[in-house]
Image 1 (tube, chains in turn orange, blue):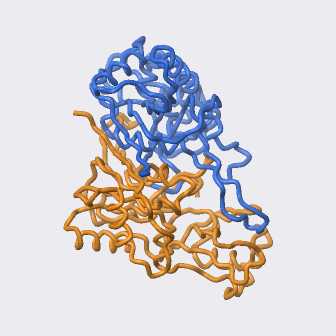
Image 2 (tube, rainbow over the protein chains, first blue to last red):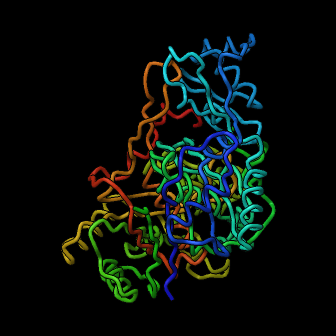
Image 3 (cartoon, rainbow over the protein chains, first blue to last red):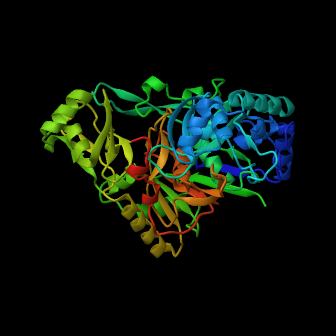
Length: 256
Length: 256
């Protein structure tokens, strides 16, 4: 038997506005592709549309930079109001250089500029520039979406909310999972003999991140136009554990 | 139009032995799946089968550990012969702790244990334990494979050789590209407004790494059984640049 995985960018999804009902938007997009939700579907959903539906906009005009934000803005040559927002979204600033601030986000990710999306800042002349924050609780967002689709269609599917981020050591961004529901994000595999020769290492594949990266391939630059990718043929385990197993604990991280 | 990407694990690939002809093996596997090579196919090929075909085995019995290897073995509690091999394959040891040595490989990747595969060490009693090194020049391996398939089938396809590796900050391994041919590994996209508000940032998507991760989803644990994944529907640019653009220069890396 040939193993196959199909990724379909669900078509015709409109610009998402605060308060929009994502489950309805997604069901409409399924219909446009002549598809219906099925058991074991995995939906990879771009963070941007989740944040927009949840109205995670922050208006820079309302932000009063703290002394720390002013200092950070100076060192990183960043808008002080944006620096303030980055600090509010983060546990700690890990690295900075002109134009980029790499933080440990309150949600645990290491992420440039706290994952804040600035593509809504049209220009410096914009009367009310706004930026878009990550969802407050992406695992909860994924769960709500999964629960709603499950209720409306009586199917067991999984949701991954993805974002793109840079990485240590390598150029370019790739998709990664900021939240998930209904899928075990790490899959245990039989590993190599350990270096002591005492047995097999425990190796885990970050399946949710690989799916997030695969989904990102179809979102590409036009993530606004195709922010939802349906993956079919994925073998995954159902789980309620969310995405936190993907986060390496700080004390176990050799590169933080 | 619906955008779709299909990943197919080419079936029935036998255990690869040194000297085996990978192009023939791959064409046979296409036929088994009732497929023929087509323009714009992307083949994601597991590093392991490339290394095996190229006889990149190293026999531990032949390895004489240096003083540096003995010291590294002591500190990382590793087989001194393996430590020696890791040092030979690497430019520098970046981190170490019991059971793991993270290096900058001669080829530029940051990789645990220099990407050396130990799954051929059957046991401590093995008379001639051997390990498998990365291909000497994965981009050249990818080019040879691409050229051979192009010549035999008159198609323009792309090759990505993938391996799995751990990452900073996140748990679990994911697939990444150690070599490629016929594909531009980074895709420029229009980015966000830069933090100075002076225009758009240059953002690049690591398409080859996303494809490597997607292919890895189908290889899973049984990478020996399905080491070649065909991706169809990928929009990519042809390029002869290989995989080196994916490597972040050391002086530009905030985490090395």
